[in-house]
Picture 1 (cartoon, rainbow, N blue to C red):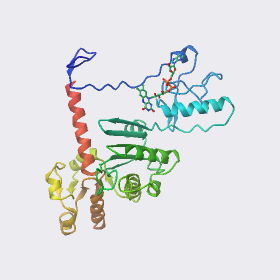
Picture 2: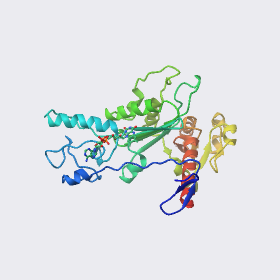
Picture 3: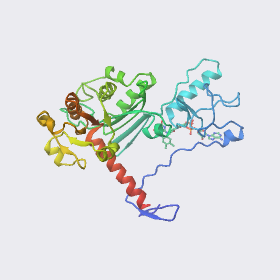
Picture 4: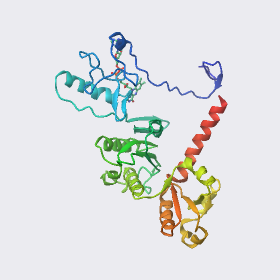
Length: 335
Ligand SMILES: Cc1cc2nc3c(=O)[nH]c(=O)nc-3n(C[C@H](O)[C@H](O)[C@H](O)COP(=O)(O)OP(=O)(O)OC[C@H]3O[C@@H](n4cnc5c(N)ncnc54)[C@H](O)[C@@H]3O)c2cc1C
């Protein structure tokens, strides 16, 4: 590292005002190797449900030991699991029965006032596992909008479409991120379904939350999907357009003028009913800013027999996803 930036292993110099280092975690397995312990498929010390290793006289917990996940073994280097498993291993050694629950890897980081948290699986990991999933994006505010300093959250819930069980969630925002991810992690641990999130009775006063908490909102959106609402993801829009689908922006003309999906036609929600004849026979994608007004628009169009899909997470998710993809593409080209 120099005053101007960093020099890569390739010899290339990259100039930067600030360097953020994310080195990851790799278990030191030397002791385990020396003891002849079995290394598991995820690359850590293989343990059974009592945290016992392949040597019946040795138990292993913490970063170097594999964790039980619902799809098999995994590596999750987190302090909470190291502590819980330490207690359980001690119980097991003393012959006390233990419950080895699957690990969800609930974690949170903060940088420059923004928090990013995750529990369970990400979409990418599930795709790699070839698993089917229902994805829900939402952008609720962390507390009542009329109370000062309300900030928008970016939330993603991943659900097993067959069982309605929650497979994972990610939340990013300025405030209230820890509360939401912990509630979802607790729901997952308790084996609750995504629809059950509707019924969680969460603390509400205007400075802390909303009468419909963001976690409840995820449950409501999931319920709409279970009831048959058709949606598509932000990265599927272009392919649908190429296949002849029209994109309707049901936000206001002012919002549309501030930025729009290429090819999107302005059909403000308030005047949609007067313009239905223009849409008959078309297949349409509807979107608003976050997906709520377009849910209403989709219901109106479906009642009229028009084939319609609601853009999950709205313009905001499409914009964030598109920007991130462009950024990653530029970065890949600059290497
Ligand atoms: C910078 C940093 C920040 C982190 N922040 C978080 C966080 O915010 N939240 C979170 O959940 N997790 C966090 N973690 C991860 C967390 O610290 C680990 O998951 C946790 O400490 C793992 O516990 P452990 O017992 O497996 O390992 P450790 O806590 O590393 O303990 C292993 C011990 O074994 C000793 N040791 C190693 N080899 C030998 C040997 N041959 N003989 C004798 N002793 C030996 C080491 O000196 C060490 O004391 C962070 C980790 C780092 C590095």
